[in-house]
Length: 251
Length: 318
Image 1 (cartoon, one colour):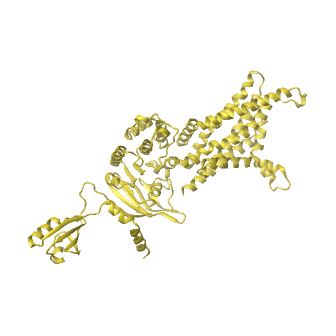
Image 2 (cartoon, one colour):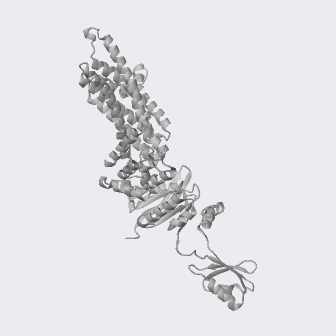
């Protein structure tokens, strides 16, 4: 456990010591800021709608902005996960972990926890952006919190998937592209499932496995155990695959 | 216990697809030993070291570190191990201090002792001047030293160094050699190198590997004079071989041309003095007397050049 935390701390330090993390956070903040303004603008223009169509500003932020944020995160997370194993392998520093008294599980968990520090930073910045509205309006904080939790889980799941792809190769760029491909594929499973429910076999199962569906309820403010467990299982699965893959590599 | 066995490898083999990188390698290292691993490029030195350090699982065979199996209890075994790979495993975005502190933690140095361990390692590898700098901005030589500091920070009983002096200037090489020699007092060290004088200067034992096989493994005795293996003697009025063979210390006689003989010498003996006396006494007319002993370089070339390797394989096949 101690080893895991040591690795996690060092990983977090390295993520924030590199310009990449700051550049990514800056770009994220800029793009999400623009979306934030667009959504607010759209909301203030649509505020005249009739009572039964009425949507709270928290819905707009939780529903609109956070869904958009998800897509942006999907593009960004592989850029960070590529460093975890592929880059370390390329510059040889992975040997430090292999020759240290640390099990593969500790290594993978440590790396993942280190990555979570970045996930928290990204989601935290987005949360701060939403909270600026507290000054001018009444925000449904529970709803916002559910949305943020959803984002956190979603991004952690992206991280786990990306981490796994990162263990497959020694080229950081391939790890990034592969990670992006894997995440997008799981993302669009729902579209596959829904496009032709009759002709595509297992379409129900496919859309159930897609990550998008499980975000839907969280975004609407419903924290259901089922969805949370889905993300946790997703994370566990890919971390476990990463451990298996590293074990294969050694022998 | 002074001759405690620290590292023991039995019948270690590693296969990469159809190629046998290392085959049936046995190795025992006691406390205080410095073992030099020699071999031409691609002989399997790095593979061997990777397996000893637990970075690569052997196809067959077992490694024990301080009696702990590396395969069964990797965490406990690796705690006694320091490893500097060919390419030092550094994080360019960290400072030397940050990096060494991390390595100390990773190798299980308790928090309270970490600063001491870092200070000691920096002292040993002369890194105090660059402690606050980013590793990525250091020269190759300094990076190599940071790698070395990383390998000894937790004072492991076994230190494995893959070409530790590569990329260093002559003064640094001397410093690193002195450091390795010092390490050898309390730890046991395995190092690989292409540089023969380096091995001769530092190591107490040498192992030559060629094509994945151990072809030579001997203790190197630096303080004693080079062992006499044979003596060439030239005599104007040569006696018959039996007379030469009677001289104490001579094991065998081989007649060369022009009254020259090559006398094989019994182990640990030097017949030269007795030979000169006998030559004077019997009036053989001594014209030449010199000893032949093989230097490490000759042994190395002989064992690893193409012919010898081919002969080796033939023997194997027969």
